[in-house]
Structures are given as structure tokens and as C-alpha cells.
Image 1 (cartoon, rainbow, N blue to C red):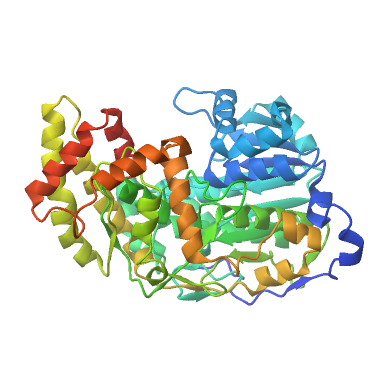
Image 2: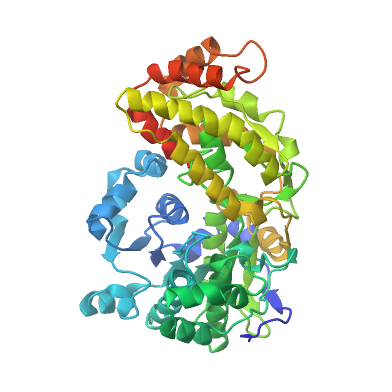
Length: 532
């Protein structure tokens, strides 16, 4: 079954912007977004926080409404306060003052709720009357999530957001944040829609009449060539957006980022809250807990900085609003936010430098002397991790139990191994995500936009970027301020092995890690376990 859309998209962009006119002004994107009311789903996530910060810092008089669901007993307003206390907002708070946050409000709701996104009727009507741009970035990113849950969030959630947008009389643009991996069943993908092996309505009806066990049994046939429920349901969601465009119900655009990584330049180099991808491994490596990384160092891996993704979202929203993007066949415009073709990264580029970065920015809270080694297959990793990770973890857990702390390191490495099994197809497969349209969009930007909303990162230097990533992981994931660096370097130098990465014996390795543990308090163990 297919929802269609397999033909090549006839994408076009209208006349280029007049650089001479705009160079002296604020730029096209800022002008188009200025004063707009922007509704964002997924506001508490990586993309959502970065979007909110960039809008507050770079777009005058913007009004931002975040759809936030209650969580762990915290209402939307309380969660908003937590969001705005994130370190990502330090720069805008310093530059604009505390009053800038009055431009952000929270509304309690849930994209999974068919009825008015979970809002009460009066609030729903009030917001619909104001919203001019919708940015839909909410999704479940769990590759192991059951089909029913993935469908509810990624597919039905998108349908509900589209319905909401259609009921906003002032709506000028809807940006759907998808993923380059919706086409991970292909080795190469262009910026267009591809056929999917199922129809959305058929899947929704199937899930409504099937038990979880039945769905699990049917899953391989349902997914067809898709790798997991995430890529499958996100692909179906794209077709829902396209159908809305074809039916002239939405002025929409789809952005497909690959693996989103730390900030390249904005708001500060290295900022991240995401433990996915290389940041998560570097978090564990900097603690000394993760000492092996399963990657094929000669394959191309596709990473994209969060600030590039945010700029692409905002530029595309402005272009849609300003009628600078059109499609001859009325198919939804799609832009890849990717690096595999235009600026490919291979781990061999940083293999000999990564440990230098880790010791240039060591952690005061490290469990053991950091040393990260690349291994070419998951089989190599499993064998090596048994010796380097698991057996020492048993010794350390025994020590923790003896000192009254909760033993968690064995569980940590067990969880890491389970995660790697799920990620194996993504770790050992090379994809080429062509981004000709995205590059074309960048080349059409006026000088002001190229400076304030850059979307071209072909000049990004990967070794320098990974050095920045280690710095960002230190501060934003491991929560160690620059003021602790001197003490961390002192500790790192004291425990530097005379040769090699560690003690030659497992027991010796574990005993030396115990010495490190004694230098810190028990709170360290909880922070270590977060990297899994």
C-alpha cells in the first residue's frame, strides 16, 4: 500500500532576494518573522529550546507559545520556568535582560490528544486566533518504542497539529521537523517524498483493532524495509503533511535533519542537552566509563549542528511566508539538513585527536583516566567491552555496595550494550543524503541572513568541531563549570598511566578506579549513570 508521492518533486524558488536592498537592513528572514506569533511543539526538547532562544535573540517583537504537557506532577507553567532556566538562555538573558522572557508563554496540552490538542475550548480558540507560524518538532525518538506508541506520537500527533494549523485563520507557514532517516531503507535519498509501504489510515485502523502482541508479531511485515517504528511512522507523517499541502489546507515545508549534534557557533559553541550520538559517547568517555566506541572509522557519518537546524527551520518559515518557495506540482518543499554529501565526516578524521581533546578538557568528576579507542564492529566491541567495561564494573559495584552506595555500573554498561544493538544498523551503514536544494536555498540568502541565519556549514572543520563538542559535553552534559578545569587537569595529570591506557590487569584496573571514586562523593555515581 502507498500514499503515493514517489515521483520527483518539482521544486522551485522564486526570484532571488535583492542583496543591494537588504544588505543595509535587517535581512529577509528577520523581516518576515518580526512580530509574528509562533506556536512550537516539542518546546522542552533539544530543537525546541534552541528555537526559542534563537527567536528571542534574533527576531524582534516575536511572540512564542510552547505546547507543553504536564510531566511528573509538574504543570505546563512550572515546566516552562525550568525550560527558561536552561543554560542555553544565558546569552539572551545577558544581552536582552530578564524581560525578554515575557514573550514566551506555555499552554498545557498534548499533540496526541485529538480534541484541540488537549487544550480547553476557550484557550484553543484564543490561540488559534493569534498563531501565524507553527513549528512542529515534537516526536518520540525512541527506536525501540512499540508501533502503537510511535504511531500515536509521530503520526496521529502530526495529523492533530495539521488540523490545529488549518484552524488558525492567520497561519502563513507550518514547518514540520522530520528526519533524514525516514528514508534509511535507501542508501541514498534526495529532497523529495518517497513511497511508503502502508497507508496512514490503514495503520491507524489496524492498531485500533489489534493487541500489542498481535502488532509485535506483524511488525516485520508492516515495517517492510524500514529499520524501526520511528523511521516508519515519521515517513508516514511526511505524507500527511504533503496531503495537507496538496489539498491547499497548509502552506508547509519539511526539514529533514540527520543526527543533530552540539552547537557550532550559536548561542555558544558546544551547547547541547542531547545525549544521543557522539555527545553521549563522549560524555561516558570523559568520565572514563566508556572506553570503546564501535564505529567503522572509514564510513561517512552524517552529523549536523543544532544551530544549523534551527536556522534552516526559521529561514524556510520566512521563505514560505514570503512566497519565495513554490512547487509546480504543489508537493511539499523538503530540505535536507545534512552533511554526508556536502561536508562528509569520517571518524578517522578525529581518531588520533579525540583523546587529546578529552585530556585538554578533563572532568573533576572522572571515574577513571579517560581513554577512548575505536573498534570496527559490534562483535569486536562486545568482546573488548567485556574485559574493559563489564568486569571492572562488577568490581566497582562491589566496592560501591560495601561503602553504602547503590551499585549501578553493571546496569549502566548493560543498558549501553542494549542501546548499541538497536543502533547497529545506523552505526555501520553509510547513507548519502543529497542536499542540493538546501545549498541552493543558502546561496539565495541575502548578506544579512547569511550572517545571522547561516544554513551552509560546508566550511565546518570537523576536528575543531569535535574539540568544541568535548568542551560542550564537559559543561552542559557533565555540568562542570570552567572554574573546575584547573583542579580537573591536576587530577588528570596525577593519574595519567605511564604507558598504555590502563593497568594491565582487570583487578588492577578496578582497584585504581576505586581510588578515583574515593576522591569524589556518592553523587558522582548518579551522574556517571546518566551517560547510559
